[in-house]
Structures are given as C-alpha cells and as structure tokens.
Image (cartoon, rainbow, N blue to C red; front, side):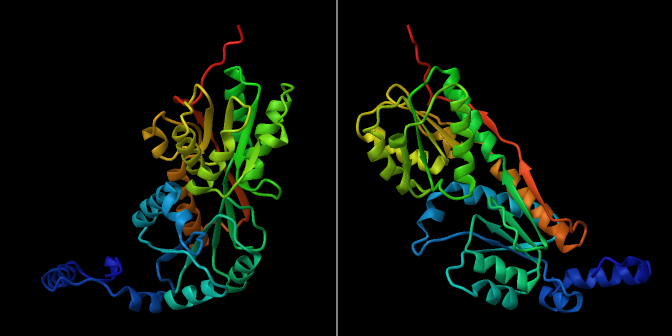
Length: 317
C-alpha cells in the first residue's frame, strides 16, 4: 500500500493487489496521516469580505487556484480552499484538518502572520512581502515593471494626458508598486500625472464601476487600471455613458485573466501568468513541507504586456 514492494515477494504482492481490487479498497488517509505525521493537505487562504463579492467577481482567484491544484494533484496533495473572517480561525483550521502547509493570497493583518509563525508550518505569501513568518517564501510578480510596461505602451501611442485607477497606493503593496513604475516611467518623458486624475477605489468590479463614474469627468486620453477586474467595471460604466473605448478613453489593465480576451473591446493588459503563479506556489510550499529548501527568499515572477484593442494611437498632426 505504501509502494514499498521490496519488502514483499511477487506472489504475495499480486495476491494483495488482487484482493484490494476485488474489495474496491482505498487507503484511509486519516489513519495514514496519523502514522506519517503528514496529512497531504495544503490550505489556500484567500481574502474575503463579509459578502464574498471580491472573490466571486474576480477570475484571478479561480485561475490561481487551478494552478495550485494542477501541481498538488500530481504530487499527491489535496487542497482546502478557505476564506477566514475571524481571528484565530487559522489556528482552528490547521489543528482540525492537520494542514501541512498554507498558501496565503494577498495582504492580511499582522495577527494572521503572527499566528502562522507561532504554529510553525510552512507558509507561502502571494502578492505581499511579509517578513513575520520565518519558514516561508514570498511570491510576487514584478509589479513595478508592469507599471513601466503600461507607461511605455501609452508613450508609444502618443498619449500625454493619462490617469490612474487603482487600489490604495499610499502604503506598501502591489498597487503602489504598479503605480510607482507607471509614474516614474512617464516622468522620465516629462509627463506628470495630475493628482485629480488619480482615482482610488476598492480592487473589485464594483470598485471599478464606482471609479468609472468619476473617470467620465476626467480630461485624459486613457487610464492605467491596476487590475483587470477593476478595468472591466470602468469599461462597463464608460460604455454605458456612450463613451467609446479606445476612441474616447484608452484602457490598460493588469493581470491578463482570461476574460480580458473575451470582452469588447479586448483589453490590453499586463500579463502576470496567474496560472503559473499558482503552480509555483504549490511547488514551493511542497518543497518546504518536504524540507527540500528552507532558505527564506522573495520570488519575483516576470511580467509582459499583451496588446489588444483597448488602446488607440493618437495622431498629433
């Protein structure tokens, strides 16, 4: 049952396998985890609000989870998806299910990381550079470079009056990194983003719709939106108000979730390989569980720009 065939002769092995097939026998993983000290369970923790809207709206989480699941299944691990709303919830989950490792998606309050450090199991932090948990690794996309690439796409197409629609940029995090890369690259070309053209809202479809109502009033030719899910909301409101994309407003998003290809017009966006990020998270957490690599480090994943139909070229003639 444990694949240790060298301890059993061939005749006995064939007899046992035959009986197992006849009985439709499957190993009891609960009993096995008691004997090995490993449950073969990985928990993926995602940030949720009380209404779960941000998770239901955003295809990022589904694509990321598919990546995690594909690698975990190949390596004999099962996944528990969880969105905790209360303090000490992680301790209860880990104790009840015997979790071997955790993948935390997004930024959480410090009490979460303090709790995980106290428990002592391997932790992978996605899109947040935390330094509280020692037995961990942080996996982020090159968000700064993503902002640079978005700025260069606007510059190549002759845009000079550009706005930004983003989640919070006043404290460290992926939205700030994306904004800083975008802003700094524009300033290298003597283009400054006016404060009145920076719209801050929740990173969600509904947040994008709220931002879209404000975006209509701005005197700009385009917006860099810090997440595709926000860009979808912005585009919905602009089109609802008879604004054409990209003729009236050009839009660049960030993520390249699959929906970016299907909307009309298709969205020019910064591709961060969401599926591969999930795969990488699973590979790294399993390595930590097996004690193959305990060196703490930040893992930065490359980004590229995917050019579609939501950016127009401005003719200065």
